[in-house]
Image 1: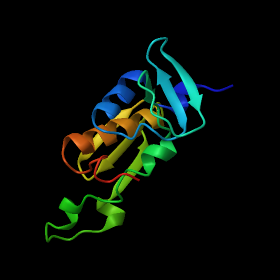
Image 2 (image 1 turned 60 degrees about the vertical axis):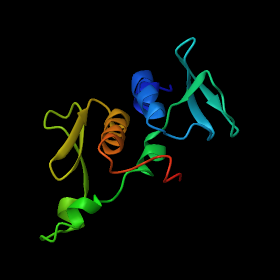
Image 3 (image 1 turned 30 degrees about the vertical axis):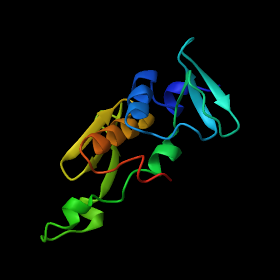
Length: 133
C-alpha cells in the first residue's frame, strides 16, 4: 500500500518548497490544497490549486555533492569527508543529512531531503529558478 509519508514531504514542507521556487510543472505527485490529498499528474501542466510533492529522487537531483564555499576555503577538502552525507539517526528512528556541520534531521528520508533543500535555498547555496533541472 502507498504510504505518502514515506514518498513525498508533508504539505507544509511542499508549500515552503514552492515559495522558494521549486519547479511546479513536471509530472508526478501534487498536493491538492483544497482537500489536502495527493493526486498524480501525468503531464507537464501548471495548476494553481496544486503544489508539487517531490519524491526523494526529484529532490536528490537538486542536492549538490558538496558546497563550493567549503571547497573554496583553501584548506584541506575532500568530498568523501566534507561533502554530502546521509545516515540513520542513532536510535534508528529517523534520518540526518549534512554538509560538514550543516545538519538537518527528520523522521523520514523524504522529510530530511526537503528540509535540507529549504536550508540550502534560504542560505543561498542553491536557487531553483536559476538552476532549473
